[in-house]
Length: 176
Image (cartoon, rainbow, N blue to C red; front, side, top):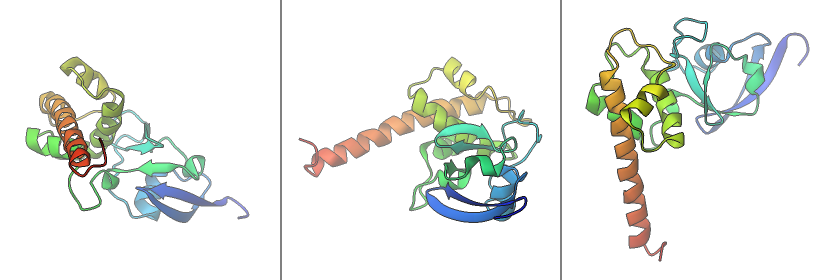
């Protein structure tokens, strides 16, 4: 494209999408306004609160600080992409529900994506690990206790679900 407009291909929640954006369009605005994915929230617009966190190639990043053109061709996971294809809640989403890890919900998308990535790097966290994992996200409603409990519950659910998958593979004869 000519001028200050750029054609992008983004793999958003495992779906390749093409869009055309101005050079200075933030990823958060591209997701929300150009692609209609409003689950990513914009809070402080300075990268401090974490509400806009998405996963870029599996790494948590503040979408309010990234220009959309900088992630051309990369895989983006938003909160909308965390649930299973059948709509089943992810382990982290289920844990937030089980542990009452949200109140108003504004910060929740950023917590969910951050914790999803955090549990890959630390699949069996302690309460201190959980606090460290969420340390870059702000919530004005909760005292963080239920969010820490949700991190620990999500790890437990992830282990249980992994065991179910392994058991199913053994039962089907896929694993000797």
